[in-house]
Length: 111
Image (cartoon, rainbow, N blue to C red; front, side, top):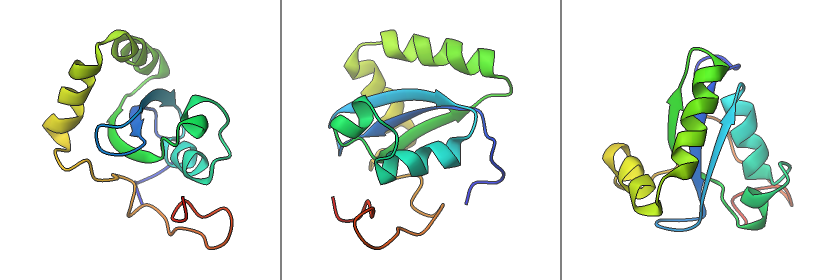
């Protein structure tokens, strides 16, 4: 698992390789990613199945993170793809080792 939570970060989730992208910001990265994976975080990411953490960037203060999130959200899609592939060319789920997938209807492994 990634160190401690709270962890201020900007992150990008994907529905799959080159799939739908969701950019977000949080002060509790591990907790927020778990919410996305379980489908308990309502909105765009849940609607479009964005559960794979493909990129994230840690910040010291929330203000910096919010500015970066807004910047990335304004970017063209191909710029976002380049950002992801520079650090994660295989589009691995960077949160795979953070926690075990739950069993049953809430498991993100079933979808």
